[in-house]
Length: 327
Image (cartoon, rainbow, N blue to C red; front, side):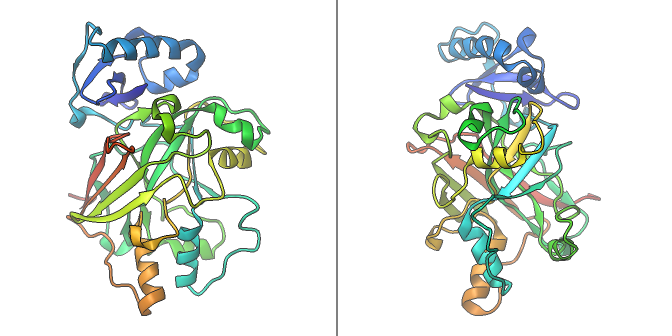
């Protein structure tokens, strides 16, 4: 099943979207918003699934052509956003470029921080920030959206509570990160609002791409019109979504609508490119002693899209231009 939210107020209007992303129908009385659907998933999901099947069969009476430009983030506001750094090549390259080694306990638990959850940008919203000097960067990810998650859930059971997946751009401000990490309280001003791709997809809809642990497929990233990364998402991490959820659930239950990301996608083979400019700059520093690829400037555009084995877009694109916040 594929879901989206049409722009309306703070939380949008829930839409059921056809498999080919061409048609849609309002969920109507089943659930006015995605958060409402997640709050009562077991009751609402069968009706949404029936509507999805009818839409794909051309039998949804109120269906209409989908205009992607009208879509907000699928979940404009979330109760919790947890993001990790689970792809080891991403961690290793960035630390090596700074002259740092890997933590001794790196494989014992995933690295996680809690980001802004009260507002996600839509897939085509500009990335508006006060200054280029903040070191603007994108980070390509796939995030899970959970239902209720009980306190103390084990990793091998945790992914049962994943209801949806979305494309995610975790916007990062590279010039602000070092000082915040040095103070040891972690990211805050260096992590502004993130962006979600337009379409949320249920695990069963992913088919062979979802093995119950990771989502496979090709994450392609374009920076300033040039292909920047062509990365396999289902490899090169010792941690999966269950590990992330279980690590945080040691001390808290999750509300429905919690987002969980594994961090910037990255492969051990650096010939496939990178899922953020920061990692490319780290590779250049390791090789040449200094970075050469510039971070994002006002007017620059980035595009992120995840594809299945047949080359079909799974979540729709994230396509954003960087702009000054006073524009």
